[in-house]
Length: 355
Image (cartoon, rainbow, N blue to C red; front, top):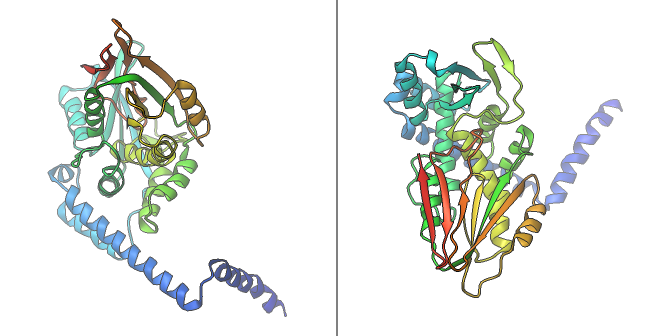
């Protein structure tokens, strides 16, 4: 009797699950086969991406060809490395030998690590993040490669070839500078402050239609601990580790879902571009829907998770209005230039970069 009682909840749940989906056993088996086939495709995509991003730079980091081959074999057998730790170090630049600083810059450009320079108390510091195991870094770079090419490159105003996520900054401001007959330009600075580890992971499930191995690796990365190698202690990190291009790609995909798609439905046909947290919206001189700061504010208030600040400029006779480009925090997106945008009385938009 007890044995039947123990099994009853399971049978009820199984029956309920099938009834809710209106599937027969044969249909459920077919669905599971599709999931298996999709999982195999994802593994093949990852293996191909690993081959595509592997370069001499990874050899210098200690990932030799046989390590790469082992990783690809592990993925085929569903035994992939679990990403548990991201190492962090911070150095005062004046105390670093020049060759070390150059090395960090080169490895950051190659996507092997992520580093950024910050001024603190009048001194410049370089902050460095990298996977404790370089093989895991290669795996994350492969995932970034897939996300960039399958989820980001297809979006509006994006060039066909993107070598790095930061290439979008150039495309973003190039698009701004091409605008003509503009009567108003609105800058929205998004603040995705609610995108902690749990919320980011939930939204990625929706934004990226790839299950199984793909999401396990991403969740491993998002929830990995950040270890300060100099202090020899774990750091409290409520957000995804700022590991460069992979982090930027994940935030980009989520913002596409929770901002871009909803904006395109709410303001159909309105011209805009976005790089990271900065959105630039153009009001043309034609008969298109009027966009006001009030309407944009109401729209942003209706969005989950994110908030935003709005700055607007209008073309007026004999007056040139300007907007400063947004400087990102460095957690996800990084700006190469300090930028200023202007709108003149003829409705022409100009962009100036300051190194």
